[in-house]
Image (tube, rainbow, N blue to C red; front, side, top):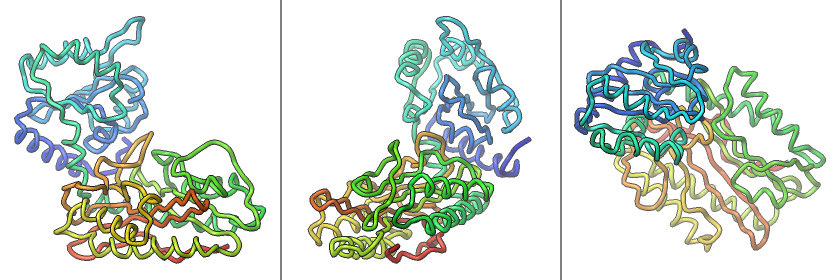
Length: 383
């Protein structure tokens, strides 16, 4: 069985979840987020692109409803003992299979929580669920119940995040010799992803971001590769990944002589990330982190060049995004607690001058000052 944690760890997670369900007066919980299923049971699959759900009852019993293609996947990678298969067929409605399953569990009229805010829940599935379950029981949006439990990482999870951070550093080390005039984005990307794979890591939950020249101002992956010029800029955002646990980094590298604007924006990014280190500790909130970032940038006249978020919680995630729900944005009341793994990114994209600058890496929070997990410093990288 391909489990990444001891069974005692999964038992402790289930106990925490059942206690939270008891607090919310939920008699059952329908998990549609793959990371929720993975965290709770070890179940590892991309089968969530089809209909599947893990039913967790208040007594701690679990049943996975999925397709035949994932039957063996569940048995091999998870602690789930009861797997029910719905049959692919013309006009199939697996939510009817789900309703029948819930009825067999004597849950008619029960208070049932559902994870709606996840990529495993399409609009079509939501409509089918509403059609089958609206009159079956009391349906509660429980999208953030497991997500909230996953924010604080166990020692075993932290070990995977630390390994992920090592792999992220290895990826940067592999890229640096290739970042030069005449260098290929394709070679850089291949070297970075190859370093993660060679180190025993996994695919990231979203693509590595790479862009040079005008594309250095983009914050998303796009198709197409470019060759670096004598005077250029290259923005990279990537993550090391261990057992699906992510540790992200972000840098803008300047090829050739940096412009005065590059140096000015780097100074602002560095000041902001160092200021955030003073806030990234218990007693403050995610909103406080964003406010610190915004204040420093805004004082430098960079309001319209910055973003409306400056990072987020990281953990075990699946495609299409390695971001967890909790983000550093204005007004977020989520308290910072020890043993969170948090990615802070300072991003300034000056479209007026065509200048990009980014700086970011992953921290482990403690009882006091946060611990940066990268062995690389925050100096401006010049090539």
